[in-house]
Structure formats: C-alpha cells, structure tokens
Amino acid sequence: MASSPVQDERTVGQLVADASRDITALVNDHIALAKAEVTSGVKVAGKGAGMFAGAAFVGLLGLIFLFLTLGLVLDIWLPRSLSFGIVTLLLFLVAGVLALLGKKAISAAKPKPEKAITEAQKTVAAVKSAA
Image (cartoon, rainbow, N blue to C red; front, side, top):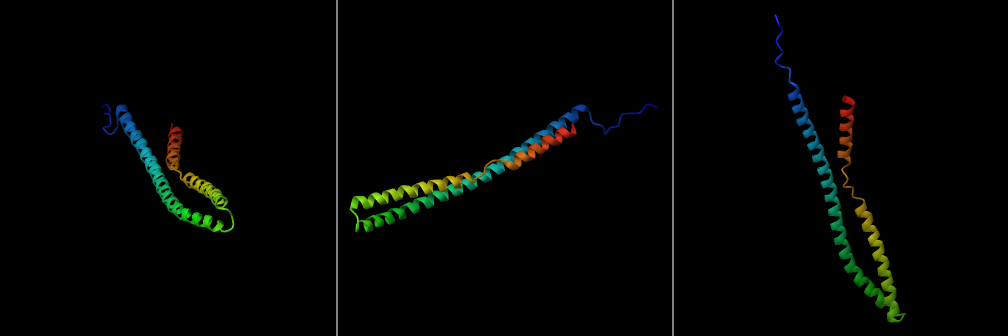
C-alpha cells in the first residue's frame, strides 16, 4: 500500500507566504517602536523648549526693570551714559549665559530611537544565527 501524503504538511509556497507575512509584521512592529520612541523624545524636548521660552520671556521682563533700576542707582555715583553702559554689558553677559543654558537643555533631549535600533539589531542577529 502506498503511503499518502500527510495533510498537515505545508507547501513551499505556503511557507514562503507565512515567512513574508511574519517579516512584514516584524518590520512594522520595529517601525512602530521607533515612532513611539521618537515621538516621546520630541514631545519632551518640545515641552522643555516651550517652558524655557516662557521662562526666558518673563525673566527678560523682570531683567529689564532690574537693569533699569541698576542704571538709575549707578547714576547716583557715575555719569548716566557710563552707568547705563555698564548695565548694557551686564545684559549681554546674562544673554550669553541664558543661550548656553538653553543649548544645554535642548541638547539633553534624545529623540534617537535607541530601543528600536537595539531590537532591530537583535532580530538581524537572530535571523543570521538561524540561517
């Protein structure tokens, strides 16, 4: 009696179709992870930048009055042009410090999808070792 083929065995075409579907799903999952990671980092950076801009604006308003007061106080002992020249130099110094702090805060944001890259590298390594 001849043995009949087992019905549970799958054809090569079915296996290729399944592998293609699985690879597509895996790539889509990696893309979704990268999007989620980048979106989270960008939201944090945007929120921080907005808060930094608001704080800088309000601080600038306060500094205007503070430096105006300082110029008027220095006017008691120095000529008016010299006292406001000193205050102007101080303002440029403060602006430089604020610019450096803002650059540092924005540089701290990491929108790079490190987890997605790591997972993709693990997947590639697993596929290579299985082959």
